[in-house]
Length: 151
Image 1: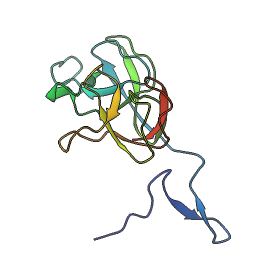
Image 2: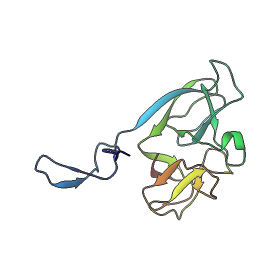
Image 3: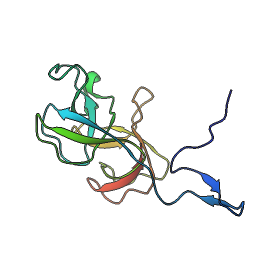
Image 4: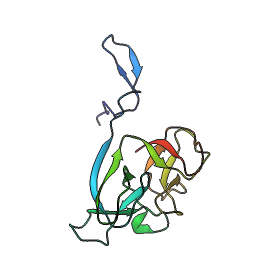
């Protein structure tokens, strides 16, 4: 089994002097462009819409919904407000500071998943069967506020 040598934005690295320093700057983020099957606000958790086949199966997103099995597996966070039918940018990896949390009491390191209500928000991972979307990097500031998470 091999050991990972790098996970962007996480852990430590050696600088040119050989000293271990924290990875705190230049958080890399990964984005994809997908079609919105409904209006999606910035900061919302999104899932692949398996019911829409325009532009090919798997090319549309909807608000992630923890109550709907087909929509509970969030793939990322909308990086911009996307009108229904338009292409939009979705962050799928890296540090995200615009994800909308439902909880005011999240602690650093907590697993987060798609919320049941309202669709598009993220909440504390409720059970062992909930898929993890992100990990909280800061203590929650207030419900419905954007907080830093790592996808």
